Image 1: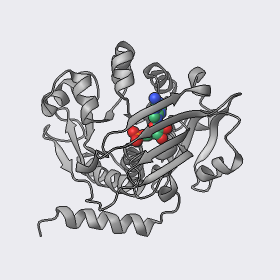
Image 2 (image 1 turned 180 degrees about the horizontal axis):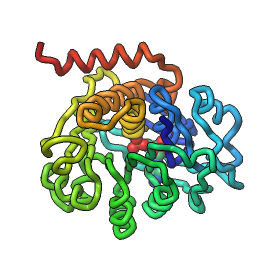
Image 3 (image 1 turned 30 degrees about the vertical axis):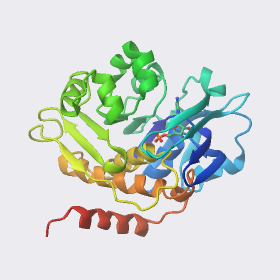
Image 4 (image 1 turned 90 degrees about the vertical axis):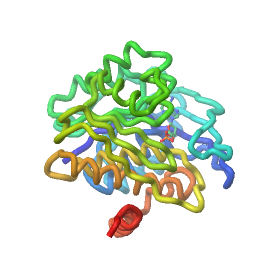
Length: 307
Ligand code: AMP
């Protein structure tokens, strides 16, 4: 089954305690697409500038990602700069240069219209909603957002949340969105806004999924998957989007969507997030094999299995 992702393609400048990288390929759409490409067909809708070369594009096409939805606009590609101090779970943004992203109006190629899975990466909520409303074959929509939109465009975001089946955000964003410092209470309040399930990502501590009563199965009790304890995290950038790519990619690769599939998907999200942070930028996500992914899934099994 095919997933369409709409998100950012960026050149990132990143500093972490392990070193730095300048103008490396990144963006929510890129990380998501690479991670999901190990599970299913991926189609990208995004915008880039004239500085995005054939070599950059080949990072995606080598993984079989369909790039016909990448629009080339006049100007520079979106750029983001950030750094991580001791707390690797929190990026401090140094700069955000929207460039061609500022006037982005997602255009979905006709060939992408039959996509059954959709991921609305972190972009303006009105653009997210417009994409969802254009797609008539979608069975499951995943979505992301961030503090910038929660604070700046709450009204639009509230409308978009009604169109999202599974929202994936981090602890801080969930608390901010709900206006509540208790995570389970925040989750309950977010679920009232529209999504049937809410994945809250806890960075190096894993992720928890909260369900609305009877959504995708029985009851409403949450489920938590840990993250893999890693001795060295070189660059946390893109971990969240790679998590989302593994999570949605795995779901799209399965015949049906139920609680068991969704719980396993939470582990595949953790697997892809753990690879993403091993090297700077998208480097690690470019050259994985299915055997690498299966071996790491096994590590997650051992981490959590009681025997
Ligand atoms: P993550 O670490 O998974 O939350 O995502 C990091 C990626 O998000 C980086 O590659 C950035 O280029 C991208 N990014 C940062 N800020 C924004 C923004 N305002 N809109 C879209 N993408 C962004």
